[in-house]
Image (cartoon, rainbow, N blue to C red; front, side):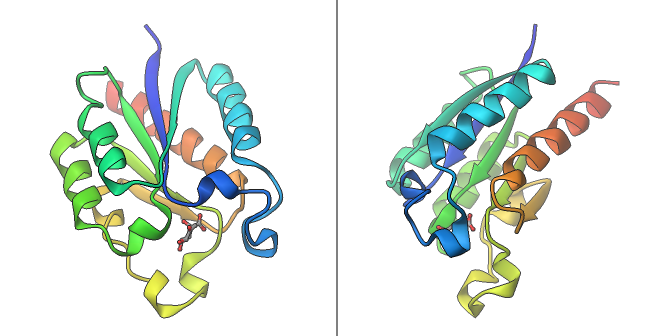
Length: 150
Ligand code: DQA
């Protein structure tokens, strides 16, 4: 049975492609997801995706991931990265391997973006490679899950 990866995107990421393209690039979220789904197929993984602007909906989705049979999470919490104890607690509660993703290099931006409440509950963070960040995260998570299965 193939492993199931849940891709979660937080607030304003539905606007990718038009949103500050000089920072976030020109690819739209559906384009990024379609590309990632292809990559997942090549890696023998199943990909479910979810985007919401609502913190509660994101918390609910993470909370439901165990009963949904999810094996690992890729999450771009967007602005909630820097504010959300609730998302951090949700990741800690399900304790699934998660990789945090950012399109932009948050370490090179405003000070308030340097703090991530969610990263400490993830196995790692990939930041700054634009849409490629998602693919790198998927490859890292696939290798992590593989090595854990051995
Ligand atoms: C982001 C970085 C966050 O600081 C910002 O609030 C976002 C997008 C990124 O992917 O670069 O919405 O998560």
